[in-house]
Amino acid sequence: MAFKPLAAVFGVLTAAYPLLVYAGLGRLEPRHLAWLLAGLALARALISRQAFWWAAAAGAGGLALVGGLGNALLPLKLYPVLVNAVFLTVFGVSLLHPPSAVERLARLTEPNLPAAARPYTRRVTQVWCVFFLGNGTLALATALWASNDVWALYNGLISYGLMGTLFGAEWLVRRRVRARIEAAAARETAHG
Image 1 (cartoon, rainbow, N blue to C red):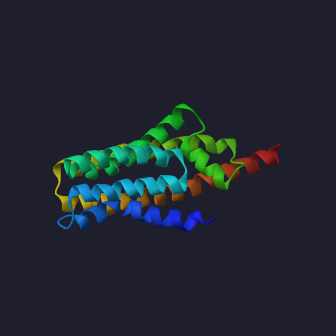
Image 2 (cartoon, one colour):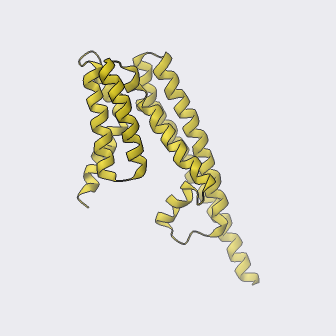
Image 3 (spheres, one colour):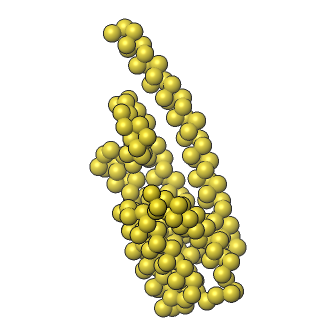
C-alpha cells in the first residue's frame, strides 16, 4: 500500500522524462542527464516489481551507460523508443501465448470475462501492437532527425495525446461490443 503513491510519483516522472530531459538541455551535460534516466528507470522497477519495468530498466541502464560514457544525448533520447519496443514485445508475445495482454488486463477488473469477449481483447491487443510499432517508429525518427524541441513535443506530449485518443476510442467501441455480447447472451438465455 505504501508503494502506491510512490509508484504514482515515479509513473508521472517517467511519463515526463522527455520534458525533464528537454528542461535539462543547456543546463546539464548529457552525462548528468544519464543519471536521471538510470535513476527513474531503476526506481520505477524497484517500486513496481514487474518484469516489464525490469526489462525497461535494463535497457534504460544500457542507454544511460552509453550516454553517460560518451556524454551523448542521442542514447538518452532513445528511451521512448525502448519503452515502445518493450510494450510491443509484451503485447506481441501475448498474442503467441494467450491469453492476450488486453484479456489479462480486463480480467483484473472482470475475472469472469465471458468467452465471447476473448476475440475482442485479442483484436485490441493487435491494435495496441500497431500503435506501439508506429509510436516507437515516430519516437525513433524524432530522436534521429528532429530538433530537440520536436523530440520533446512528440515524446512528451503528442504521443500521450495519441495514446489517450486510442484509449478513449477503444472505451467507446468496448461499450458497443459489451452491449452486443450481453444482448446475445440474453437471447440465448430466453431461448434456452
